[in-house]
Amino acid sequence: MNTTILDITNLHVSVGDKEIISGVDLTIKKGEVHVLFGPNGSGKSTLLCAILKLPGYIITEGSVRVHGTDTAELTTDAIANLGIGMSFQHPPQIKGVTLGRFLETINHGGDLSIPISELAMEAFLERELNVGFSGGELKRAEILKLYAQSPDLLLIDEPESGVDIENIAVISRAINAMLQKGSPMASRERSALIITHTGTILNTIHADIGHVFMDGKIVCSGNPLDIMEDIKRDGFSGCVKCIENRKEIS
Image 1 (cartoon, rainbow, N blue to C red):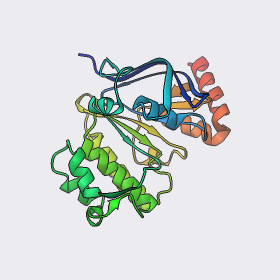
Image 2 (image 1 turned 120 degrees about the vertical axis):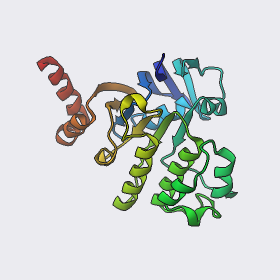
Image 3 (image 1 turned 30 degrees about the vertical axis):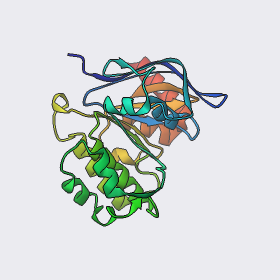
């Protein structure tokens, strides 16, 4: 049985007349959690947006396959229906639509009472979607949206950005629950691709594979905690050298 959820081959993506992604190869299998490190402007968020073919992100070369289906001719909603859900770093405000109504419309996950309670979102169900939400409230609403969508692959853009320690803990527990992190890999149904700047999220969410993203490319991959230590010590460029050195030693 093919357990590959996402298969990206030689992907090139442009925004306007500028190429942002310059030849990315990435495969994510069922149950795997991948994390993307990289400096600002390196193209990490563009990669997530391109997977869903959001407006303005043009794939000029290469392919994206979800569960073996080439998404080249598919619309964003059709790709989402293949089992892709995204938590945005800066989700839009939608006036006139309450969070509760929005969740009812997209719900594929059944009873949401438990995640609503665990994410402390009861008081927000009658509020307009994301309007006046704080940083932590926005991120909790985005994770609740993923619960409702119940996707096979979670694309999560900087879950710890602009969020205090308490909210990071709440968000991490919810993500871990969706990813069945207490279960053996073989029994997990969902995977994730998580962007992080600080690496803080690794304290509460175990990632299986880490990638360093620079200048529109994945320049190295390895153990996420090792990569994070290299970045802290030597920066992103130094991290690449450290990983290459470890490969030579091994």
